[in-house]
Length: 131
Image (cartoon, rainbow, N blue to C red; front, top):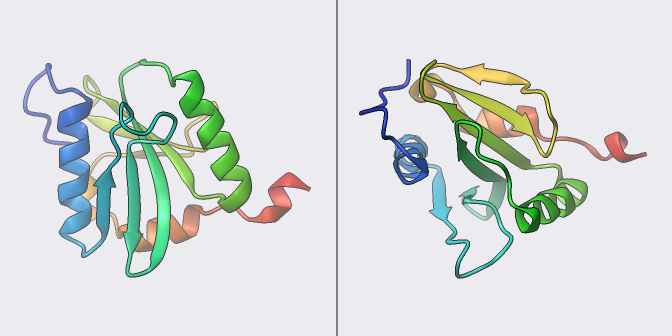
């Protein structure tokens, strides 16, 4: 179960928590402030010179903004490495989506037990999806 500090945990808490989990595995993650750069997702995740993925973080049923949807769609077509992670506070888990898919492909209950570099590589889409 994800150690949510209170029912008031928000996207800021979720962002900090996930960055900490990734950093513990020597994976870099940078929060991108959408007010400074409209459109991109919340996190850029990389290791060395390799971009592992772009991650949009949501809490509960919050919607993805129009500018974010366009960015996610474009990045997903180009590289197939865009993910949406939705924190479900009551269930204490995270639903993971590939790009703008409507159905989660995975539900995670303990983010510290995931091998994140392997996770990003296994989830990456290939170009055949768009043919």
